[in-house]
Length: 408
Image 1: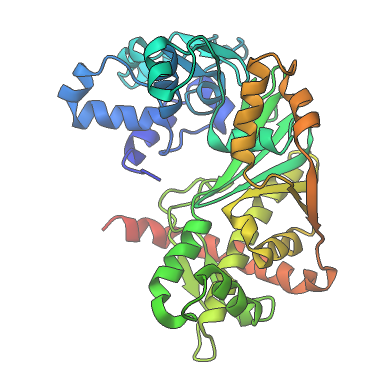
Image 2: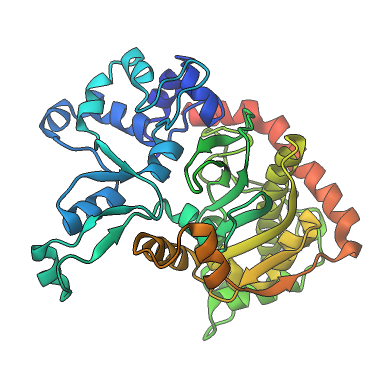
């Protein structure tokens, strides 16, 4: 969510380095290198003192093992790391990209050891074992980015299914056996989850976060003495699909994909005196579903098959939200028996690292089981097709104004 590096991201993108082909041809401001470039330029003394640059996963692994390692998953998906050479891009860290923006010195601060998901990162050292009350020498396995661990925890390890990881933001993830390129995509990321396959990623910056924002704004407008998310569902469910013409853009934190616009703003339009709290809530749910459909349309245009959606995360606690997502996409949405797929995916990585299973796909077959399935309601198709067209057209019309608003 930290967009301070927007200008630095633009400069990285403007290098047109060949490695950018593997991240949709641009560098998102949310990713590490824009933040590092911002840090170097705005906090030079801190930059010079820093000996190691790592994410929290690598820091925790270091505390457990005493060695600096990083997940191949994160390196490939967020740090432009390449595990094989192609298209004039060598293996390893993106040195030519960093040279172009005077950030080459970052490479010396990055871990040298790269470990795939489910790979062994080391063994539990004595000091950490004492702190945790465990025995030294326990195998420490590498997991990955939370959303990617959720993908594993729902056993989305082969093409054909979309992983929908809900929360404050939403990530959409799919697997492909070949590299697929599109400027609206994050990726393709080689070996990021499954060795020999490519991970395709898209996302929405603010989904559950927008719902929470609206509930905070509404305050006491909802029933008291009841979980406010339950009350929100009840208010939204009382409104017909389409929210009586109320349209919202869910760009409270900019737009990730397929429109990559950090300047995009949250928008509410079409309000009349006939609209109430329920309309606002339903329109937010529908906006997040329209954003998901836009990503599905992108994948379809890339000939990436999506026959089913598997969902996990906080958003799945709302049955209404899941139904709206299914209706707008006109695809079934399945849940797994273990709702916290991110934790399960991490446990599966540990199991593979401990040699309980030969690979993540085998672990998924044994440990992941499908639960409820939400089928789309075909009677809502017409109204949601119209709402989706309005959603897309609203961004097209307002995009120039977003630039002017953010200039102040």
